[in-house]
Length: 99
Image 1 (cartoon, rainbow, N blue to C red):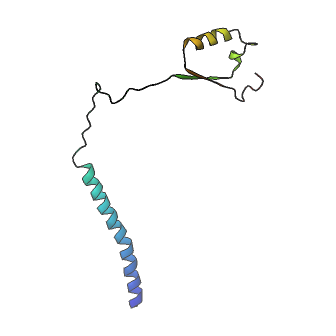
Image 2: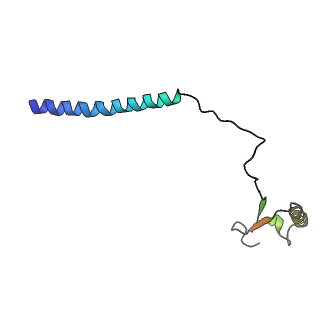
């Protein structure tokens, strides 16, 4: 009987202890949330470095780009040239394998 009560007591303690630890963790997190706010200041007039963004374009194979079949292919490539994209990529992929 004594062994059984020790086992039951040990089992109850092992269940209650993690619950108390979780409560302490929740209290710690609540203290952090309800603590002093973090102040963030943004200055839109001062910059640390200049950004260098280069526009790119990917041209994907499709029937409208075909010289043999499309009546608008010249306009498409003229518009592409007017964009002055430094890096234009041509992606030949499987939906139109015969173009």
